[in-house]
Length: 356
Image 1 (cartoon, rainbow, N blue to C red):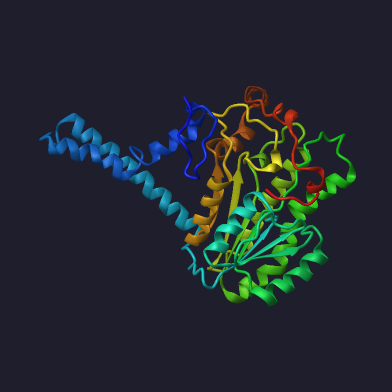
Image 2: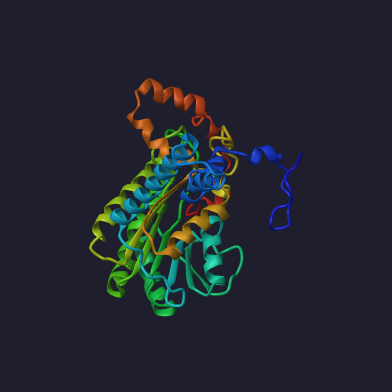
């Protein structure tokens, strides 16, 4: 049995059961019996059936609903205490810069914001695959500080002071440490790490002066674990995750400058073309549109924080606290060290300064 046509008008050739995964089940639960509104439906229904408060089903369901509500409120309070109030977001006054936006996730975000009327600048060595209204392309090797300085001045002069920066540029070579050459290692850290420093240094002062801004750092679930053939990529993503942590501390004094860390699992973009997740149920491959939607909702809401998905991306850090023998068992059972064997990646000509 196949899945019904997708909203875009196309039909997937995947069996419908392949669309079932643990994240979908958790999402359904979070919006029903694990949500305060859903939890309170049961005691209200029982009360309407003339159950008395001393009856175990009624007081038990009330206790459950109260615990769910308390947990939900504590999560809301924790976010507010940790990241403060959200900043105002007015699309008519926002200017977006996205690195590595010529294709994949970066292009998708640029397209949507461009169609919504924001002024968008794409910084990439490759020209975007399509032209979109309000999206301006600036050819730039974001790993080269001199090029970033030159292009940043053009962006400010032509579009205005950027208020949203999405550091999305990334490359992945999919080779062992011994097979990686010096040029490939440098390109990984230039694109994945140093580009973040260069763009922040160029655009953050303007955000501070404007008293508003959002900086999005695209890291990865692999920043917590280094599988075979991912040494350079995992190390670079761990570096930008800690860069985000330091940046967040440094801008905490500015009320309306927000930082957002995104740590996704595998996304179905050309970056990791050919890699198949060992378990689609526990580690589903993410669609770019779903990742883009979560990022844009956070930006539009003016909030700071961390986005980690699928579900395993939120818990993978726990592995570091487990005994080494259990860590090795989990690596073996997950198949993470064998997943890169089928890696193809982008076309070699596009694998120098790429994008997610």
